[in-house]
Image 1 (tube, rainbow, N blue to C red):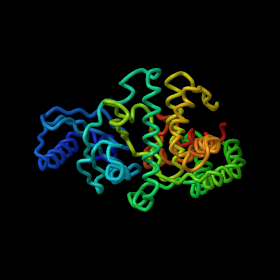
Image 2: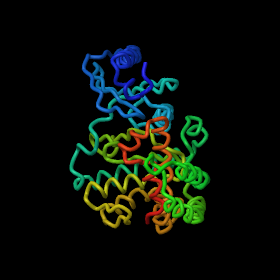
Image 3: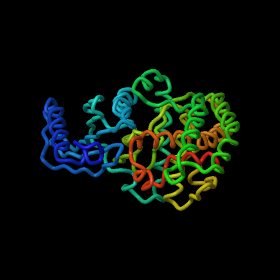
Image 4: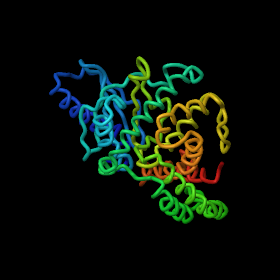
Length: 335
């Protein structure tokens, strides 16, 4: 037995055990494995294995400690908003295992980024409507183990991360004294941004935090699109979703500049399509301002997600990813 999740999850013994569990879960549905399988995703925080079956393709996923909440969350999302995520067939929360039907090809494979504008506008509007539904289920979401990174908790989380990174050597992912000073000087602004979001009228909800074109499955159109990979999801301001989504869309069409506002009108139309369902809570101008604040404060949540996902991993793993906890946290100083 190895202590490395990556080595464990790619071992023959583990894959045999997972295959046996999948076969057992499918048997009750009258479905059998055909023998064809592939493990296209294996990272230190999770791994996914694709199995072909007599009832169509299915996916087995194992989550590490830092992303463990995904297992009960995907089942909850499937129950509360059917069709938003692929159908969940079985879960084993104790082991961090889940089994879901295939959601179809990912959006990134459907067409080039310049041909996805209408698809994106439909997907984000549908996702926003789902967030509004999920906003009424706070207790169930938090009971699933989802972290709360809301306007109420973000200031405290930011101060904790700042304290930890200030004590960490720079070559191990820590902050320089100058960077510590920059972030510390911004803390009063962070408090004000969070207070503004708390008073925006937009209710807290599930925030996917990694909604990009490789995490949307696309078959016949918007109504059948499925959102996958909920391992970074938090409970907080739903508009924070636009940090990852807008950055990714802008990057893939060549409209992203590090540290600069996103001004491409095509990306902003996606943002506006996302905001439309939230006009029931606030007017559009206020929502646009709230998105800007949620994208800025969302850097704290992204840093926290990586901190959780990489917990216990050697410095070399953090370094290979260019110290994502530090890099996301310093996003607070940009803008």
